[in-house]
Amino acid sequence: MKHHAKLRFGALACAHWYSDLDVIAIKHKCCRKFYACAACHDALERHPSEAWSAGERGERAVLCGACGCVLTIDQYVTSGSRCTLEGTGEVGGCGRAFNPGCRLHWTLYFQSTEEQAPKLKRARHGTAANHSHDIDIRRCARYITP
Image (tube, rainbow, N blue to C red; front, side):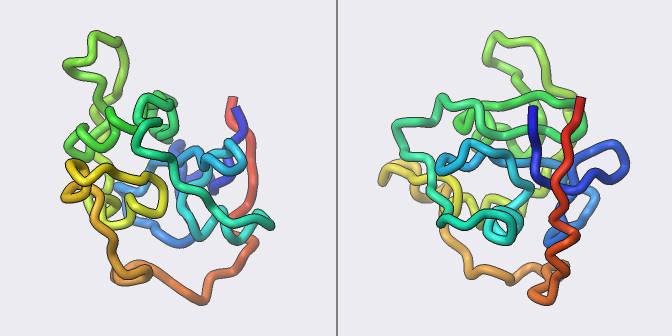
């Protein structure tokens, strides 16, 4: 499986968001490639990013960089910011915590119905303390994991 993010500490890492909780990659609908964030996608692709529709919540589109588990969009947004398949009847999920602040950017990746809108609220881009607008594009390096 091809991923377009930087490898750090045995997990996915991002050149733009770099806390110990930033370990996921999201498959972008437009190109079906996993990127650690929308900014990494935009730095390496020549097309605009496209959000998954509300009807595509069953798509396996969120990769845990710690264990390699791929969650559906619905599993991810209801996971409580943790790699878990608990309550789904599926085996897997390492329990690794994800950055809960990522929910502020979910609308970059996932469209919502009006019912889901409170969970998928839009935030201003670049409001996190660890975000850098002056990023070296080479830090968005591509790599392939086993």
